[in-house]
Image (cartoon, rainbow, N blue to C red; front, side, top):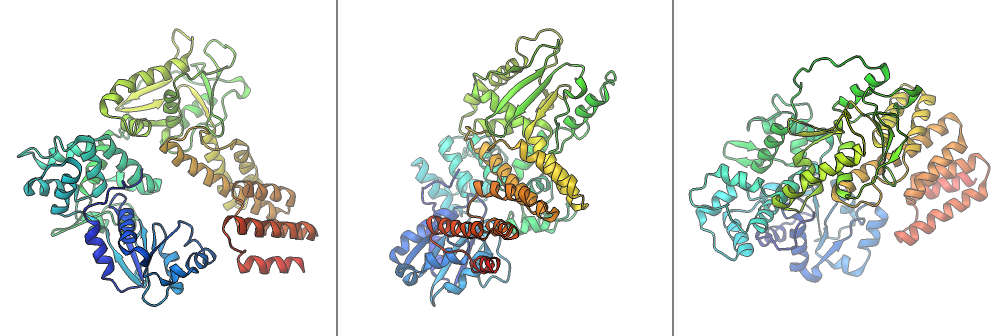
Length: 572
């Protein structure tokens, strides 16, 4: 979800602020949905020929920057505007600015204090009361009384995009009834599916898993929000870099909508220790290990242990899920020993429920997580009409024609859906993560053979992009994560094989990286070094020429000077 194209009411105020600044570097720093992108678009429109927009890759390195700023129009512009970029890239770009020029860039993390410029902080990107009233008028066509506008601003903190999403979904109904308590207005905002989806995917979705857990670990008091008192190590640094607070006369506090959403998520989390159950009958050692791992809350999950030595759990059920590449679900073993069968999915969304659970920590997720991922734009009525039929279809698809005492494949406990741990689930994405972690642990202990063995197994598991053929937002997020892990795996494996002197195996790993990302100069250099070690100057030259051609055709630049120097060194 990107910020809508409606010009937010506060952009005129902020454009005037930008025009009054004299510093060469200006960072627009704000939470997702505060209108950063709209502000930069408004600045480009207001300045006309005096402003030039930079593409996403223009700040990536000096070559791209030199090309972007080398034109006549860019040299004459007063404002160079980048919708994305880091502080480090902006500092590097400062040397290319001419006197009187300003580079304005947006970022979600605050630039370090040594940035030679000025920062427009998140607090300045929040709507004031009059701007909330203006937004109301633009979206509903009706005037909003100042007291009601102030209540709406206080509840939302003037957070632009959640307010807009709520107004577009409700038309303002239920948000400004006379005398409505602020708590009810807050609850009404969180009842809008689009607002919850925004908070979950655009705000929390850009955080690392560790950062999300920090936010959910404790319900901080206002005084602890930025001080970090009693909260996990690293808390304060995360909050300060993200700017996730609101300044008040009493100090700092979290944005009210974020705090309410986190409190809601905490209430819906399963209890730390489930109620004690009567002990089950003894299981074979192999099945016991599988069940314990399936019940663990962490990302490590069930490996390919089912079927070894003919052992199966007492339930007799073993499923294999392939989520990397073309997805498939296969029942390997049934309760009465029936042959393997491929599962048929007439309802695409029921398969996605299974894939979402199978790739989630602990093989579980709450109803809200499922609905926001699989029905992100649907209203509550549509979701209520389709949610349970979708899960029923999933249960029937997994169970097939099996009757009698077959355990249910899907459990529901304390508001959480999970894959039944009494069944053995072989899931490639969990094995993929586990093998990578095993290899990394072995490498840290200098067990090179163990690391290579684990990473080779992980490589074989990656049959292609996560859920190939599916393009939903949650799929794209997880797909990017697995693809990043895959490229890092291949790079690290190639480096390790070089250390072991296995040059052919290293070459295979490096070439596989270049198939996925042919513009990685570091990998091209590694390949050239391997050719040099083999005495193949002809192939070394071809590799360098290929790199030059790719960079010229794709980016219009030449290799980095260090790359060219290394090439000449290897040739001699």
